[in-house]
Length: 427
Image (cartoon, rainbow, N blue to C red; front, side, top):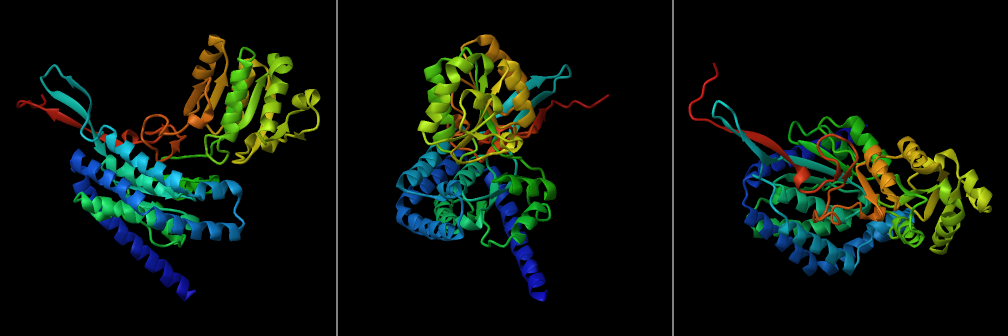
C-alpha cells in the first residue's frame, strides 16, 4: 500500500512539474514569430527523416510487444510505422508550416457610435493536454499543430506506442531548440503509469487550459467523466453511408468499398451501409457483392437477408458498433426519411455520406443530419484534417462547443477583444 501511495505522489509531483514548465513555455510561445514557429516545424520534419532508422527500431519494439499482447489487427495497423508513414508525418509538418498563422488574426472588427473601435482577435488557448492511444503519428501531429497555434502541449501517448512516441518526440525537441523556442513547449509524459492521466485530467493546478482525448470509447468516457478542464470530445466514429435510389451504381460501389475498406481502423471508416428500399432491385446485390469481393464481412438486416440469404444477421448491437475492422452492417431504409431516422438513432455524430443524384435528397441529408461532417458523393475516409487542407488534425471533435469536426490550428485558438478608444468614458 505504502509503495502505491509513494508512487502516486511521485507521479503527481512529476506531472505538476511538467505542468509548470508547460505554463512557463506558453508565454514566449504565444508571442513567438510566425518565422520562428515555421523554422521549428521544418527542422522537425528534417529531423524525422534523418532519424528514420531510430524511429523504425523503436517502433519494432512496440510492434513486437503489441503482437505478444494479442492486440487487434486494427490496433496494430494504427501503431505501425514504415518509411512511407514517416515521410507522410514529415510532409504533414511541412504543410503545417505553410498554413497561415492564426495567432493575431483579426476575425472581425467594427465601430461603435461612440467612436470605440472593437476587434475580435485570435489568441492561443495556452496549454493543451493531449491523451491518445496507439497512433505514434499523433505525437508529431499534435505537437506541430499546437506549436503553430502558439500553444504549449503535454502529450500523453498510450503505453503501446511509448518507444515510437519517444523517438518522434526527440525530433520535435530538436526542431524547437534549433529555432530558439523553449524545449518545454512540447513535452511527452515520460511514464506509462495511469496515474499520470488522472493528474492531467485534474488540470495540474491550473496549468492546463484544454484536454483533447484521441482514442477509443473507454478513454474518451473516462476523460469526460474525470476532467476538471474543458474537453474537445472525440467520440467514436460510427459512420454511415446512405445509398439513395437516385445514386449512380458504379459511383456507389466505388465509394462504399473505399469508405469501408481503404483503412478499416480509422475513425472515418464506414460502419453501416443504408440502402434505399427503392434501390433493392438495382443497387443492393451489386453493392454487397462489391464489399464481399473486397474481403468485407456483411452483417445483414432481415430485409437484406430476404433478398440475399446466407449472411450473418445483424443484431441491435451491430447498429451501435464501431467495428474498426473489415465488417459492415447493412440495412434497407425507407428512402431519405428512413436514412435520417436510422442515423439520428444510432450515429455518434462523426461523419455520414449520401450517394445520390437527386438534389432534394442531398438537401435534406445536409439540413437534417446533425453530424460534424457530411459528404455528398464522396467517401467517409475524407473525414481528416489533412484532406480538409488543415495540414493535419489533432482529432475530430464530435461535440458542439468551440471546435467541431477536424481540429486544426484555427480550432486550437480562442479569441480576445481589443477595444481602441480616444478618451471615451461611459455615461
